[in-house]
Length: 386
Image 1 (cartoon, one colour):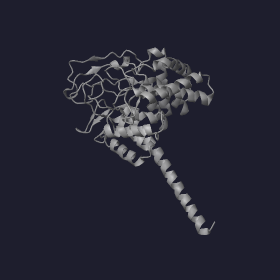
Image 2 (cartoon, one colour):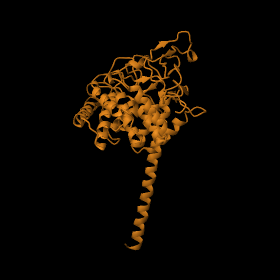
Image 3 (cartoon, helix red, strand yellow):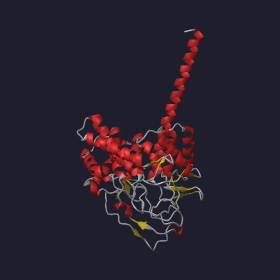
Image 4 (cartoon, one colour):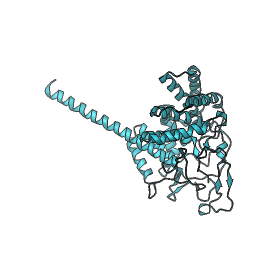
């Protein structure tokens, strides 16, 4: 993570490479030498949990500078120095990795509508405050402006977390992160007495929650689905309990995790969705997106399946190369890392899963120790007749 950080601005690039393919011979070859706003929350959580407060502060400050301005001009990614113009073009004279073309420079996804980034930015602000970072100038004003825009924008279809090149859809993950935006601002205002239109925010939070539960959950599948009206699954749904939309014990979450395990778990890894089913505007075929498998680990841990979660975590760590680094994806058939390398999102997800495992295992050991002591006390009371 330090190696992917640009010290003068604090920006963290998604990867320092472009066009390493997600499938050998495929066309899913993208330029990742930019800073994604989506990474903000998970990056701040990872840095803060590990005690890297200076790095978390620098990343937060980059975020504030990058998103300053009108919310309707918000981009989902920027250059490491805050650059906005990221025009995508193909370098026709380069053969690509192992002959895989095209080689691309720039990223057209910068112009997409991805509603989830509003929730991720707001959650990043919330998490930074919760980790004790001093408030940055204009954070509150920026948050208010973002929520004012989101009050109507959340109803729109978008390109979603996976930046599809196909038609816009009402992606469930995008709607849930819109809910996160209002939830976090309500929580902070309630806890610290800040002036805010709380009644309106609470009403919008409830409206979005009800909308997702009514339109994003399929009773036949007993699972949330990728988009409203869809029958397809999506690994981004694993983030619903992680962001607090519903508790891990909710039957709808348990059903979703079970459905993803049944349909998207292949060769020991979680695929983000079935590329043969989802209309993402590209030919099918890719490796397993590693962050999704770490999200699955987090869900196993939250559901009390700690041993299973730890076993999968160890399998994922074993995929690291000889210097401990991960790409964006892994192909379990060819046993090669795929996509741009090294990938920040994969490592941030690894850090967060390691932290969650450590936390939950520690809690389990404390509970086991307490139960053992209680049993000893009971035996002592019985033997003495008290």
